Length: 167
Image 1 (cartoon, rainbow, N blue to C red):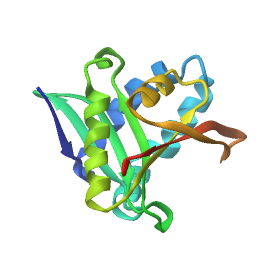
Image 2 (cartoon, rainbow, N blue to C red):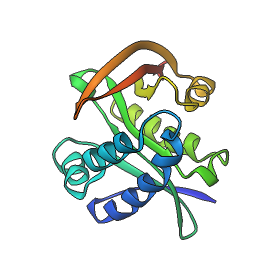
Image 3 (spheres, rainbow, N blue to C red):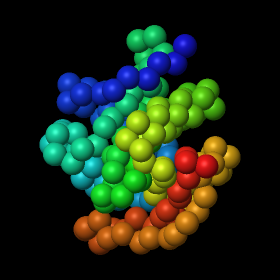
Image 4 (tube, helix red, strand yellow):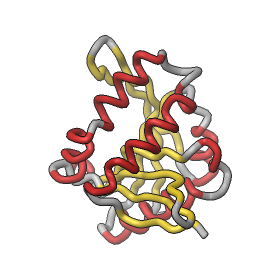
C-alpha cells in the first residue's frame, strides 16, 4: 500500500536519492548530462533543499511502499499571494511509474491546496517531457509557455499547466 507523508529536513537525503535516480532517466533525451548535473546541484543540494523547506515555504511529501521510497512532490500554497498552489517538483522512480504514485502525490497536494482555499494547482513541465500526457489525463491544461534562464547559459523551456480544482 502506497503511503504519503510530509517530509522534513531530516528527509533531505531521501529526496536527493530519488532526484539523482530519476533525473538522468527523465531528462536523458531532453537535456545534456552537464545541464542535468548543474540543475541537480542547483535545486537538490542540501543547502538548496533546506532553504526551500525552511525559508521558501515549500512542503515536501514522500511516497513510500513499506520501507521503499517511490517518489516525492513539493508544493507551495498561496503562490505569489494568490489562491494558487504551485507544484515545484514531482518525481517518481522510473521503475515504479504507472503504479498510481504520482496520482496519490498530486491528490495529497490537492488536499493541501483545498485546506488553504487555493482554487488552482499549477506546475511547469518541460515541453518535451512525456509526463505532459499524465498531467492532462488527471485534469491539468496547458495555459502558457515559459523560457526561464537558470544560469550557466541554461534555460528551462516549459509549459505552464493549471488545474482548476474549484470546479
